[in-house]
Image 1 (cartoon, helix red, strand yellow):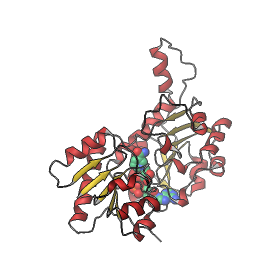
Image 2 (spheres, rainbow, N blue to C red; image 1 turned 180 degrees about the vertical axis):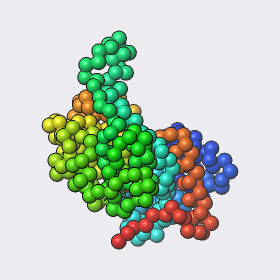
Image 3 (cartoon, rainbow, N blue to C red; image 1 turned 45 degrees about the horizontal axis):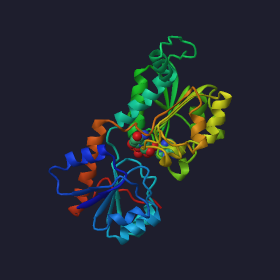
Image 4 (cartoon, rainbow, N blue to C red; image 1 turned 30 degrees about the vertical axis):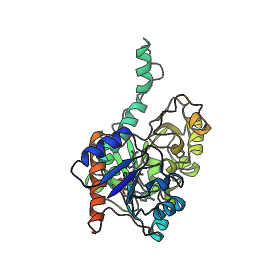
Length: 332
Ligand code: NAD
């Protein structure tokens, strides 16, 4: 198949090219995002390969379909940016990489927590400047705390396993219970119980209409004073304005995020020479108890190899006319 890639960086090109040495697909890489304007550049390709902040709404999908594209291959797990109903109407097959390295995301979640709790970003800078003061660096023992995991799928259950290692009590909320989490000793509870009893709340459910702003002012009001909130899933699970209010009054004691609801205008690009236009994000940057990374939780070599391998296999499966296990369809 000929495949046109959008939003690619040098690392995408490197890992896909290496994994495709023995495959029959022809890969064309573009650095710009996929949107209704750029979609026409996929003309002549059977498939497009897109990423988390590409725009795969009905308008873009119509242009792709008109250009002869039959397959949308997402090189990520989430597909909240794809209009699945429009894809079905246009006979476009959508495939994704449901799991590539749950460890990468789970470990980054713990990384955010450890850095936040002990203010490692502050001490790193202080020591480099010869400032060895400990003022403002006091943390807490994670051992013995209660942790609430919202969404216990592939990644969430790995987070349960890691918190087990710290000697935490783990509470879970999910629309489907995962036996692996139960086997790890976690308890499923309702959302209100999880929010009111957890010292740390970590989000690992997908972004759907039903989970949009799952953490809003009402949810924050139910949380323990000084709670640590972690989000490595999707930005819009959190109402950022409500979280800022929660930080200002101390209800939220620490915030660690790898995703942000307006991240498509910010992340994955070097904007260090630009004037920040997003006032909400700019406000988040002012808090000493907020740590933000730019959607890098997935970013390990293991994950990049697996993403390339699975995406290419998805395309091969479809080319051979068979069903692809990683196809996603609209649920009506
Ligand atoms: P998964 O599909 O294996 O698990 C998601 C879980 O969420 C499932 O158990 C599902 O039942 C549950 N869920 C669905 N609706 C829910 C609700 N309303 N409340 C509570 N739980 C609900 O997905 P995964 O592989 O574990 O990934 C989770 C999310 O992590 C993805 O959707 C993606 O958005 C995000 N992600 C982020 C990165 C990153 O780099 N930051 C990388 C990969 C995935």
